Amino acid sequence: MRQVLDTPLVFTPLPKERVWGGRRLEERWGKRLPPGVPVGESWEISDRPEGQSVVAEGPLAGTSLRRLMEQHGAELMGRPVAVGERFPWLVKILDCRDDLSLQVHPPAEKAAALGGEPKTEMWYFAEADPGAEIYVGFRSGVTREEFVQRLDDGTVAECFRRHPVRAGQAMFLPSGRAHALGAGNLVFEIQQNSDTTYRVFDWNRTGLDGKPRELHREPALESIDFSDSHSELIPEFRSVVSPGVIVRPLVRHALFAVDLLRFEAGASLGPSSRLFPAGGPCVLGSVSGTTRLTVGAYHRDLGPGEFALVPAGLVAGVALEALGASEILRVADGL
Image 1 (cartoon, one colour):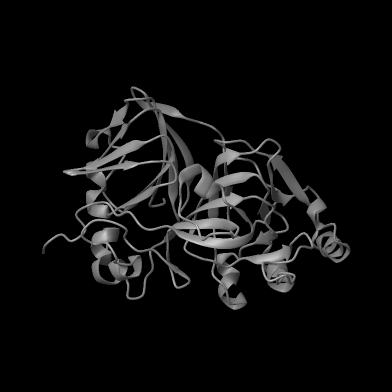
Image 2 (tube, rainbow, N blue to C red; image 1 turned 120 degrees about the vertical axis):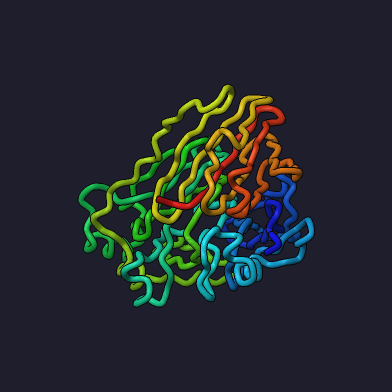
């Protein structure tokens, strides 16, 4: 059978208007945004009903990721694909010009009963303004009863642990862990394919329509793991794998594995590096600098904020070369 997916896939980003967003995706990386509105999210790779990625270039331009999964799923994923199965990851960039709501995503064992989808995710901080922080996990000793009381009196933020963050740090967030991104962060978010968020507190602000945004108190209380006080940033362990190339493992989970590849100017990785084993697909996202992606006769320079999806059958042939110092996030199948 003729191979249809014979090059990596680059998709048109999907900007999402958010009350807490800004314009930094346009200012920093030249992304096309709708004029005059705050844009908080750019969905880079999405197989969702409310946001469907479409191939931007090459012979498959105009083809949706949904159609690729339906018609060429086995070739894309490297395994048989069930009818209706969606691409497993939702890949975003978030521009947080204001604090996001204090929120939680439902755990797998409760999501269906609550009418939602489980959502485990991770954040990589591409940029962080001085003083930027995040809210993750609870202070030691916080109980459900105290949390409810503070919801009632408007001081629930005091239940959360707060962490200052800087560019280059990362955080893993299993479903059930209460959290919020703070203002001043530019974040790469890799998540389970889900868009279920239960807000518990939204800083008493109004939404884009001038009305208070909906809160989801009861499903949030059912979803939150009140025993979860863990909120440590991912350790900054790294290893040199090739001259001028450092790999920093970020996440190893059943849903996805994420690494940061850091290149000195002119450094490269070829198929013989074994960093791109055959199996499932991988996503490559440029955090900084420009990196040339090569697969056979295909070449594509990835600049900051650009992503490519490499189908499973091509992953073992990936080569990367840094055109100046650069950083790439790599997303692959989980454990």
